[in-house]
Structures are given as C-alpha cells and as structure tokens.
Image (cartoon, rainbow, N blue to C red; front, side, top):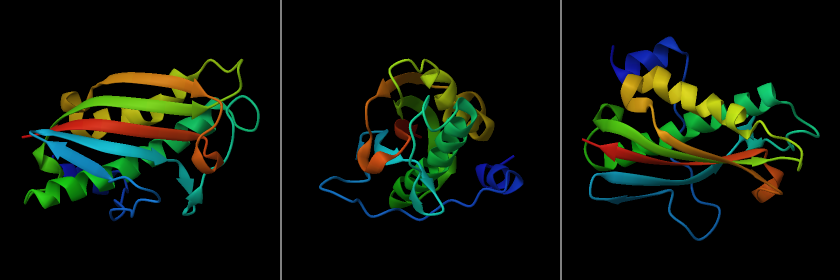
Length: 155
C-alpha cells in the first residue's frame, strides 16, 4: 500500500509547510539526510499548552505527540517535494527526539513519545522504526506540552 493510501486510510491530511516563528529553517538537507526542526504540539491551530504530570496525563500527551508527527510528515513531504518527489522517497525515519513539558516526578516521557513513534511505524512499516530520545523538560516555547524533531533519510 502506498504512503498516500495509508494516510487516507488513517484519515490523515498533511498540513502545508509552516513558516518558522523565529530565525531557523523548517528543515535542512545534507546528502540523503533531512533534519526537521522541532515542531510543537498544536490543537485547533494553537499551541497545545500543558504540563505532563500536572495538567495533562500520559494519554493526552501521547495524542499531542501523534499530532506533532502529522505536522512533521507535512514538513517532510515539503522536503521530498523540493527534491521532485513525495513521501515515498523516505528510505528511513532515522531518529526522533522528543521534549516533554513535565513535572519533576513525571516519568512517562517515553510513553508520550510513543504517540509519534507508533504513527511513523504504522505509515512507513519497518522503515519507520527509529532511534529515539525522550526528555522531560521544565518548559517548551509557548507553553506547549511536547516538542519533537526528526531526522529522515531519503532514497
């Protein structure tokens, strides 16, 4: 099944490339690797604000991470299109780094991040399985609950 068909089956419409809110690029390609800048969680087009362990639970954080994964796929698609292709050019999701706005005693950052990781595997199969880091942090820009960055390899 094609990537486009999988997205349609899951009811996912990829967003357009977002304009950076500060002095950075949404992605940079070097060789076959594409580095995507961190994307914060958004809900209804606004920052998804919250702190895991205080105002949010693990399942809501996981939903936020999944929403970020969809936004990251929109950016990755733009990178593929800049090279004359689409998401079928993704050879591998290489690395995911997740920052979870959490209280000092919250220890389920890895479970929150699964919201993104599981979606990448669902869409790309074994090529979506990746190396990963998940950190608890004191704050994320705009009070967002989760921020995720990604590295992918293009064919």
